[in-house]
Image (cartoon, rainbow, N blue to C red; front, side):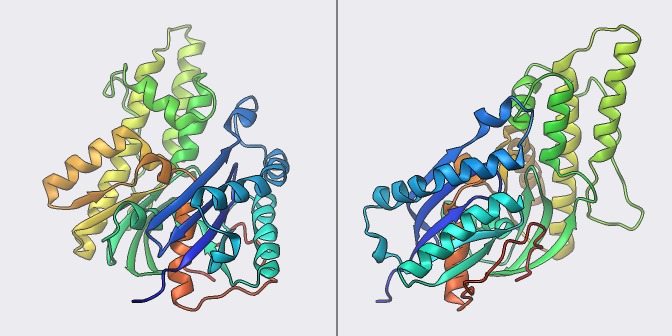
Length: 340
């Protein structure tokens, strides 16, 4: 029987300081997350310098808690996995430098993990029998991709945003209608009492049959609508705005992802990223999947937002391939999927 591989994973790409212990890329022994949402809420979004300072304060305790919760000793782990991009460079450096020092001190290999690959790998935790190939929609505050996962660690990007990420658009519209940060959950909640067909906002269409996304247009359209209503001193139904905006974004996400599956002849879609926890997206994607004979997979919400368990899963598959990172590994804030 082959030996179980235990990965201690660290994630600090944005405003969550997280550490986890994952066995064989699919079983989570611990998943500790220290969120900074309450700190950044007053600023209406993440302040990079503040995020970095909080990571410095939290990381040692978070890693300690992850080891204790897993019920193991530090030397029981086989490798240290860590996010090195993409993300906020200061935030990434805190987790990366801590991971390098830890790996060196206990003489264990260091595994550098692409944050986007981590989001995709969250599905291997939720569905232990899942194997490539499959399509994946990665949709979060910083990223919007349709990816074909050929094999572990092998990706083909089929479509991506040309401007704002979907989650970024949610945050900006939430701020514009006075909901605050984080925008995604607040838009979702307000939209429940609104009419999704009340306002028709435009959708970007590309003439080259591209599967890419663009959300800057709908964002501008919503802002123009709000400004026009204010200038005309008309009452704004915020619930209708939230519902109509959410439907616009979700419909584009669903349509392009289903189209990608038909082009590649794929019958399984895994969804990943913070926006994957949006209940409206889940409902629409499942409905469209049934209509087109496509299986739809979603991780539970805790695995959709930034966490270290997903990084531990991705690190395991890199470890199995022998992709050990040097101790001079640097943070790459604009790291592309599939790059090393």
